Length: 127
Image (cartoon, rainbow, N blue to C red):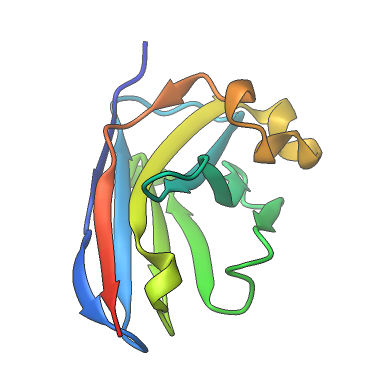
């Protein structure tokens, strides 16, 4: 079992930035780590994913060019730098982990393919 703990959420004005962090209770050298978000009344949406070797990175279309996913394996951590935030980015953001094979295809966008989830951190962007 793996425990994922997110932090770094908060409230920011449009155009601002936030950095989310996710710490895992243990390290696995062949994982896919990802960020999802869910706004009220909407389905959970894939935001970004990264393989633990850093060679595979994906972004959802709505965040490309604004968000950056990164990792620090020494800290069992993955980060999401969010720049140029928009009100439509308002959501609860979740960290997720699964075996690395999910990182090799568009399967990363499918919520049901992920094995472990954090409790989420709220991001609110005001106009």
